[in-house]
Length: 121
Image (cartoon, rainbow, N blue to C red; front, top):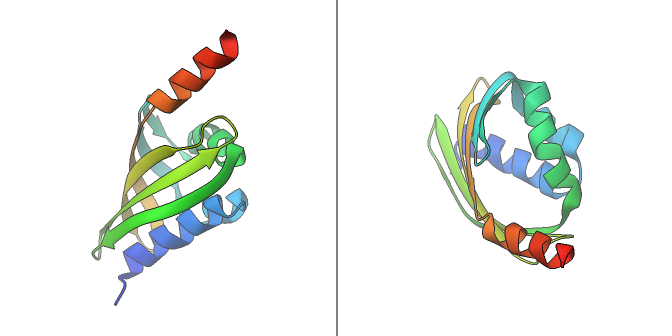
């Protein structure tokens, strides 16, 4: 049986990877705190500013693993964007009252660094 926390995380993931970023935001707390590779961000407007450009560049995503309990969920996925063919990532979510209140995002920046360097040459 899937925990409600994991289901919230999966619903969020399926929304933003399915091209409906507005629906994805309905799973995010207005007071979201997020640890990103670029540093910490807080609040829904900052989260949108960080995540929406990536979501809009997405061509495809594949969920690799998902685990969760009643408070936290962890997903690992691979994405293909207009810039790179493969960009793995992982997110640890804390969920309260049906909303994601905290996210820790880890992803491999190297494919993006290499792709941008090729574009500049």
